[in-house]
Image 1 (cartoon, rainbow, N blue to C red):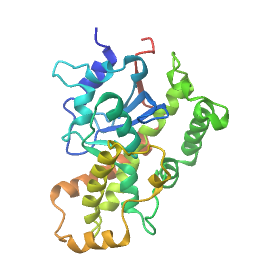
Image 2: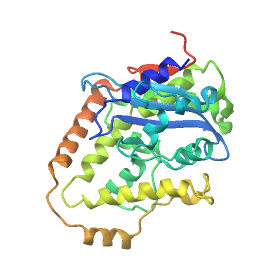
Image 3: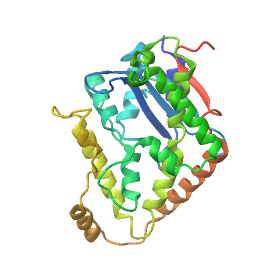
Image 4: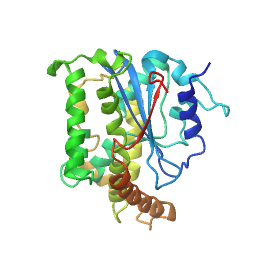
Length: 299
């Protein structure tokens, strides 16, 4: 019998608007990539009602395996079809190792990806030689209170002490069942802050004269996915810290860009992103989200 929480997730995603992202995700595992494994997929799905908090789903890939991706709902939507759909935008921070793991282990070729790491790099002032990490972006760009950031940091530190070998932890903690509450919170907290980051960077990329970056980010994201599926991809290469653009490629893109007025879709999108950031400040604490976890939490 199909897992009810997987079906709930699929039904939740079905019918969500696709003109702007409603789905934010992250993967955890042991040495995440082609040489490791996927343990958990964390998905944050925005509520249909903009005034309500979204829902966090933690999908137990370690236990469910292929079933997590291939189980269909009544509309024949599966997690695989969602991840591979170009029509459904999915926001993630640095798609490369997640894409590598999904393709290597489950033959899933992700599409419709919005890569926040590249959006931050494109919207940044100053040097774009190196990409930033998620913790730095949250610390610098998410407009929440100091108390909320301190709570986020405590949750992150508690989780990392459990799984990081350099802090006395072990990655196998992601495969323990029942999943520890500290790991549940660790998996949930980052994805619920991704909409706020997306709103900040999206607004910056729609400033007059900066729209050419949208195409740059899209092209670089597609290139990241393609590279992650190649035979020579190294999930742990130090070269991954470098940005994909040099001064010449940026200047060329800027010169080729036709500086028309943004159309209504882009204007609406920028306004919507600003609203999401306010909603996250008001309603989006990681500890206010409904946590629906497949399948190890008893109901």
